[in-house]
Length: 310
Image: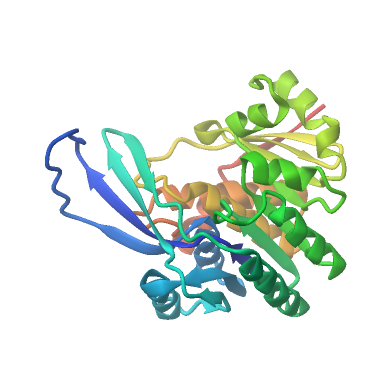
């Protein structure tokens, strides 16, 4: 079973508009609301791909109850640490071919709540074979909290995929207990290294940085251009077909879900990359955030091109 960790879950609200008017009334005819936060998007896609998955994290309040009801409706297993504080809403306004996000910060956690979740995680790790950790940390937890979760995973011999950025990612790369895979985009990679990274030669040099020593997988997301990846000592250029985008929100999370399934199943490096790209593309074709139609998976999997780079 795959375990997904969402430390700062939310109700994701998507408002599609033909145009977004500043300082004026914007009326929305169709609203999509889903149990969200990056980790729950990962969870939903794994479930829709018919792989066994359980969601965990920290949740609270009326919004938290709504999230759990949503997961129950979708038949998704979950075991969250429940707190008295309120979980958050995250709003995405889709307009003029762009995406404007309004993200609440969520509850402020204390040290006791952070320790309590670690105790829950230790128990959950007894019955899982792979973990995904996604998104930001709630205010109140230290920047190295994900690093401490990775350490717990390593002690239980459970590999983890980490999809976060900024301080949370950097702190997790400064320890010996590295994740199995990280998935920064070009901007996040440039911020980590303190320099611009765009060309193939720059990407190869960047992924050989000592900061990434001990990582088995680094996948750099290139948006519509696909991805550039390093698996152990091998480099790969991944290209994807042009597709009609309905809702791009959650596509990175769907990509992580595809990676997690393929790695959980012990697939080849090429298949891992193709699976992640395929689920990411499928998400963009759906109105609902963090959602895919499994029936089209093979069609788009076959259109992903993976080239090994010398």
